Amino acid sequence: MMKPYSSQQQAFWSGFKHALGAPMMVLFAGMIGFGAMGHTSGVNAWFTGLTSLLMFALPGQVVLMEMVISGSSFIAIALAVTLTSARFITMTITLFPQLAKEDRNNKLYAYVHLLAMTAWAVSMREFPTIEPKYRLSYFVGLGLPCWLISMPGTVLGYFLAGMVPNAVTLALVFINPLFFLLTFTEVKPWGNRLAIGLGCLLGPLFFLLDKDSSLLATGLVAGTLAYVIDRRFLRNRSIQVIQP
Image (cartoon, one colour):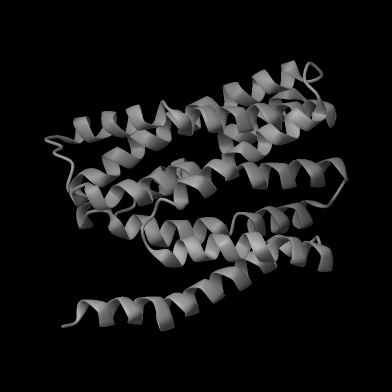
């Protein structure tokens, strides 16, 4: 059932209200953890805070900070962060084609900065219930407050460092991916849930084989297997059930 939006402003504020709940709190907690990590690593507050504002990609920020601390070269850092952020390619090509045709223009180069795991997962869940012409406004309303809260959360975590145990700090960093995982399980296609399940099973195995490439290998293998199983078995079975 489509949500009865009557204007772009109404769609925007609907996304904004959705962001004020769990999405913002989860992202804020993750940024607090990242800020504390920056402080304990000896990185200054400006650098730590600006990475959240300008990058807005927590895994890439963690990689950037670790490589800066280790004294890696600029080229190595750029390559590593780029590879870490490669997930945004699939997020972009699955989300933005759902927008209305008139909204798919050069302005998306600016709006894409608001794209994060949280905003993407919630938008993928909500877009089927929103008319295409209102989807961009909803996405901006959802992503904007999440982006704006990232730097204050990082700075707060930076100056609160040392007041909480290291285990709690690390847990805060992983709250955002966990929220993304739980949110995405609500998306109806079984292929998505299958990919998550296979990832949970294969992740520890690949980590034991090679911890440096385990995340990439897990995503590639689990996603590919889920796609093949979904295409060859699950969807074919659904079609057979529907046909008289």
